[in-house]
Amino acid sequence: MRSFVRKRHLNHLQVSVTTRTQYGSAVEEATDYYALLLRRCVAEKSTTGVRIIHHQMKESGFPHLTLSVKLVDAYLKCGSINEARDMFDEMPRRHIVTWNSMISAYVREKKSEEAVRLYRRMIMESVAADEFTFSSLFKAFSHLGILRDGRAAHARMVMLGLDVQNAFVGSALVDMYAKLGRLHDARAVVSRFDKKDVVLMTALIVGFIQSGQDSKALEVLGEMSSHGIEPNEVTFSSLLIACRNLKHFSQGKAIHGAIIRRGLDSAKESRNSLLSMYSKCGLINDSVRVFRTTVRPNVVMWTTMITGFVDNGLHESALALFRDMLRCNSSPNAFTLSMVLRACSSLALSRQGRQIHAHCSKAGLDTNQYVGAALVDMYGKCGCVGMARLTFNALASPDLVSMNSMINGYAYNGFGREAIELFNRMRNLGFTPNGATFTSALSACSNAGLLEEGRRIFTTLESSESGPSVTHYACMVDLLGRAGRLEEAESLIAQAKQRDVVLWRTLLSACKVHGDAEGARRAAHGVFELDAGDGASRVLLSNAYAFARRWEGVIEAKRTMRGLGLKEAAMSWVEVGGEVHAPEGT
DNA sequence: CTAGGGTTAG
Image 1 (cartoon, chains in turn orange, brown):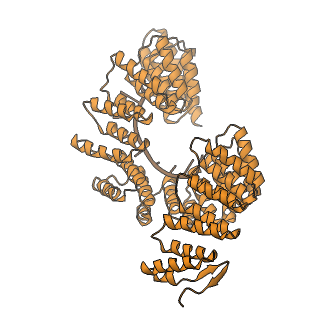
Image 2 (tube, rainbow, N blue to C red; image 1 turned 180 degrees about the vertical axis):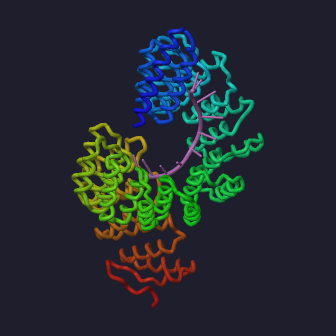
Image 3 (spheres, rainbow, N blue to C red; image 1 turned 120 degrees about the vertical axis):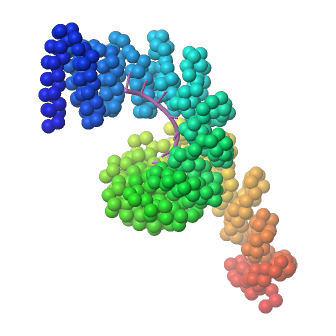
């Protein structure tokens, strides 16, 4: 075994170190030996090896500071952050590098609070932080979303007289300010920088994208060329994301060209951005072309392509590609599975959905928050409420989206009471319903005829932060309409701030159901006023007049149609009280 | 011996 070989080496080494130190010489040489072995442990990711060296160093009474630094680093590189920390805490004296190693490791491991805690301890123990410390620290504040402390750290760094032109510090600062939404400060850092480089500028681009200012991100490209800074594959990849968000495919194609010209098109990440850009712009064939020319697609690339098919309504292709992916022995991740499940939802394919559920369980991802929600949604849309419930109950800590999926699953399948029950329980658990939640809850009331419950929910919605959207008004009009509260529904439409034909159409069908001819005529007018150019809305109007048996109105409507050259519409048959009549003048 | 920007999802 490898570890046996290593142990023998170490025993041999121990002898040599103790004898040599006995003579009071060659300490440095011993350090070099240890360092050599540590490098080997790191290469093999052997925490055990590091532990043995750590132990022997202590046994041999050989507490060398440089070696301690290397040991902590070796623990970290083997992924044993806790053991590194134990050693860190035991050390009587600590080199600044060790502080920095620990802090950066915590940031890497997304344990930024601990990184900040160590920074505070540095201040308390009067240890002078350096540029390395701050470049990690800014990232920590950006993760934690604490602007105040990030700013304070920035000030402190300047106060300590550290190099503000350090490239690493600069990009970390830009990144921090940008990710905390302070694009103005990020800009200021960039403009104060004497030797701007590609990373600094890319950080700014990414910052703009993440705060939703995609066109500003694209403008940075011009700024770069005026400073003579060459974009690289990371820059291009980010710019493509901006193009995708803006659905600016001509710009995206131009960037694709630039990537090819510079020979940067083999980078997986820029290919993924490229693929995603084309898909989101509806250019699925271009996506497929990029995908097909990729030698060994990684999971992300498979997933992006599958997502592209789903986004473009090609659900069967998405499922077929998923099968290809499995055939190529590529393991789907949570992103892949939630996307494939969405394809099943759209196609209402419960058999395939169940098979994919098995994949999720096999990968241990069936309780992942994205996958879990997608599973609940899939079962709901496939009409398997029982399975939806089982999957939902299996989630350790259901989040808002999975609850929405469950509520929607109930509503969709006519379990109004259960939907409302979950809606109420969710609020008691302290969740704030979002727009989707209200839509599901209101449609549940509508399907189950729960008028009063729906009214209560709508009142809650009105006092919520975002307020009711058109969809919510439509649900409510539907609910009131089905309950025969036609006048109330009509006044609700008047009350809605947004004008939308959907509202009038919903009212119109309710009026027809309840035989309210005058109401139907007014609703048809509502549609007509918002959609006057549309021949179909004129037909609707003439039908509504016919329904109300106001023939002069029908004739008037038909005449206007003819006048507008809408021959087909004018000649269309008229629906009167469910019966169809020949058009005027035939 | 420690530090910077990027890919897919509800």
